[in-house]
Image (cartoon, rainbow, N blue to C red; front, top):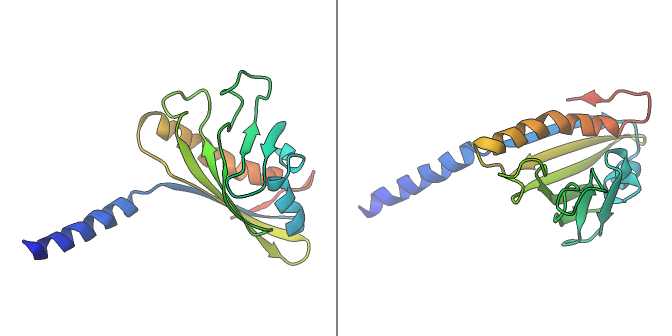
Length: 167
């Protein structure tokens, strides 16, 4: 019996990891890495895709993005989210809230990692990985929403009038 337990546990672990869903989006934008980094790590910079935000750039610091800043508290955007890890001009790892209009999943947080890789002096590869998804109901709706929107968000980082090279 003892020898049967280990293979069963190994199969259970393999099965769990095989079902993990993640959204990945990546593009090369025509901005130096310092500028691309600032677009995600400063309140002014983040205005490229949200009208207001609150960023405390340190591990554990708040990272709240307000898509509807005048809405009632709890309905503004990614309230209650935090920075998990950061490496200057390389990596930003944060918790991410799901849309306020999806009450079934709103209280849950997912995980978002944004990576920055210099491509020459004036370009940056920006990669997003969004994971921590459950299955069914509004989880699937939220997944579809972000699967469509993360490539668009990266595209918004491109200087005005230019289209990014999606991968």
